[in-house]
Image (cartoon, rainbow, N blue to C red; front, side, top):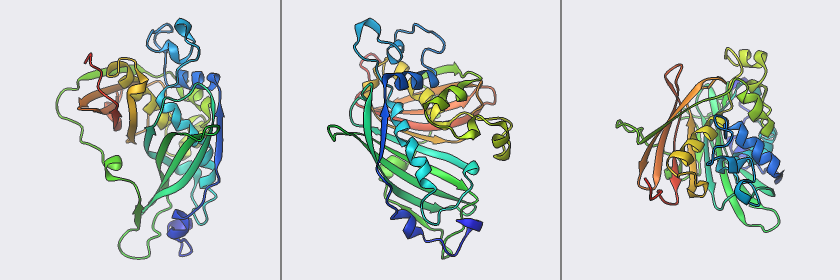
Length: 310
């Protein structure tokens, strides 16, 4: 999309692009580092609801894995996006817009995951293009489906490629997965406040997202930020941890699907306030930054069932 509207750009060649299959291998150590990266045990090193994510507590054979760990399976796909024919953009101006995750079974504490990616959507937003990538993940040895990720990525400066007056838009996603519910006007059922660490992005990047936007002050400045920002998926991890703790009573296996829309950046060190509204088997949530009183993330989580103790 060079020049924000290259006549050589063919949307059909983008949506038909065939990604190579990508393997993602991880160990218990990776799962534990990820848990620490999204704040597990950050305020209480012996938290009985979260120690299981970083330590074999109470004789459990393996540590448990948080459901948002599934988002790491897409790490290898990012570098492949730049290989899509005609899709030209400045990677420093790339923004993660939305994330949707379906969990089919509890994630194992270690494993080798086979990921199959495809383009699920492409939209011309004028000054920006939005591309949706869907990744189906399978346990390599058994072939069983494990989870699915779908991410929407904003490529700033890459729009304007439509051939007609009507902006180009293609999506194969079900509307019930892409439509975001309105945040209720009522008081939230539960609220969880947690301060991120000044080094939070530096810790989270050890899980594989090495985008310098989250670590390099110069790159952050070029992108329009006063300092490196927190990964959107890190903020999502904080939110889902809050829901597991407050709504699921620590039972991560209740999570069936996760949807999040990133509204605004978070600076490491800021305080996150997660507000939750259970509605049947769905939890609507909103995350605000306390210091700026701004919403940074909204979404919903579908549960296998609501905890009977609510």
